[in-house]
Image 1 (cartoon, rainbow, N blue to C red):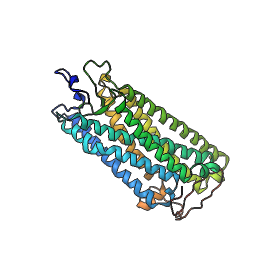
Image 2: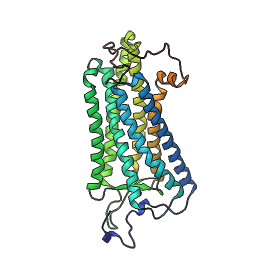
Image 3: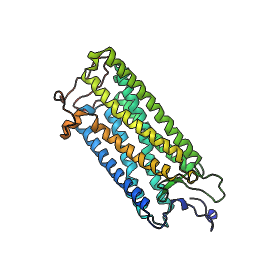
Image 4: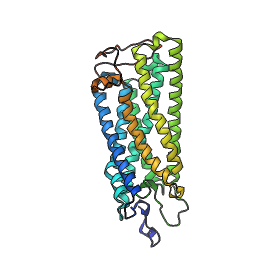
Length: 339
């Protein structure tokens, strides 16, 4: 919060975070879309946590990383349900800027953790498919636990920098339907956060790396299918492919979202309302897609939920062998969590 000297008749700190005072059809539509998508994403997220707990196929490093990513996405959507959605619909004025800033802080902290965790999930799949003999040595319980701890610490560190670097804070704007940069004074020469600009492009670069890992994994899968048909028919390999598919599915949608994030850049000067709406709503939609991917790409989940997307060729045993063909890819699964 700036000192009182920064507040003048022409300038009011946090004016970007105020509602317009009356509702429009667009406000109602966008607010409802935020509420519906965020609520669905949270429910699907909790379903993911339940499925991972109940199904032995997820009791491994991949499943634990997916849990961390899912917790991040659930946390990121809570401010959308309890703040962003309602204030977008009702457009109240005289909002305390601290409330909008806190909504962004919570959202960004959890969303950034989820974004970083996507890299670990993609790396997990690439190593499982491309370097199966090394998989169990690399993704040990200790390594997986440390990855998760470092990811949460990194998210907390990055969010703290927005408070440390002068004039970098963002907050949710009901009028613009997006997180906006908050000007520190009337004579400030920028209408965007330099730190947020770096952050938006940094997230884009990180997801690009995940996409490169996904492409590498895809080429390896194609190579195995054409050169070693026996390995391609193995249960562990087919499961690795499905886990890869759900990972790649989320990365593709995330890349599209980040394009709009970079274009909007949390700045009113962009003057493109559609960028703000797409940047915000597609991020929530991406998080919803992430949760749905686990349900859509795994027939074991269909069987558990009684959904007949396609039938399993045979009932999956409760305990799957801990070692598989070196070519097909290793995936350690047991009736207990074994990462």
